[in-house]
Length: 285
Ligand code: A2P
Image (cartoon, rainbow, N blue to C red; front, side):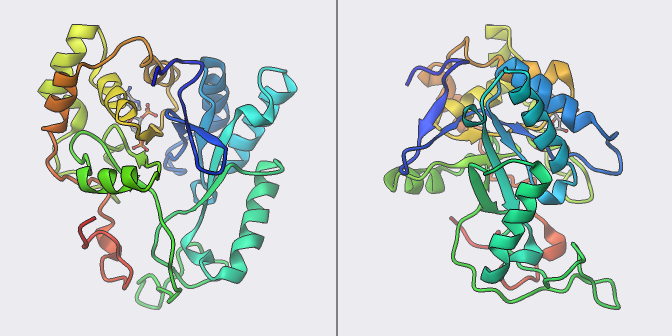
């Protein structure tokens, strides 16, 4: 498959297609100035991104919707050029809540549809107004919902998921890998004792050869394996940097070298919820 900046979509079995590179939009709402998401999504669309990954629980979905709508109004894109993925939060898992929650998301976005709607995490919390419902001891109140669906998968050179990828390939399932650069290393939810991916000597050495950064090599590695990536950046230079991955090609030897970096390191372990009956990361996939 020839991956270009204009066309790096992979077909889906329903006739739609998903761009292999998308912009992630999660940033800590306490630390991120209002409007940065709006500006970043607009810069991303101008750069050529056509896939945006967002969620209700990121508290900035209205900015994503506004950016897309402004770019449509400018005539830069049409709605159908954009692939938007939204997410169902943990407090809305009961089947009867799914449709109204999606409708709420559409209202926030002020768009008629989303292209993909996934379960944010396979661990249900008690439904209600509180996003993080807690008991009198401050512990999250879990909820028992029959969960029969799939969810996103962390995927990068330190967590290459060979077994899962092979299974998905055999069944024609496309994987979206979150945190393809090894996360923002926010210690409230990331295991920061794991080594930082972008400091990896092999990624940096391969990058040097092509005049690319370790981040660009990590992203190129994923899309060359057919794994969709959604690196978040609200920094204009890095938004553009992450899109400059269609003008070089990793050799088979380099792909093997990067695959060999796998350390089964999962950065997003969510250990605070490991006693949830549906905690997903204890099983091998
Ligand atoms: P920033 O927005 O300042 O660029 P995620 O795991 O959610 O995809 O987050 C990726 C993290 O990596 C963010 O903290 C983002 O911060 C940072 N980042 C994104 N692109 C690059 C890059 N090209 N080089 C280094 N860091 C990056």
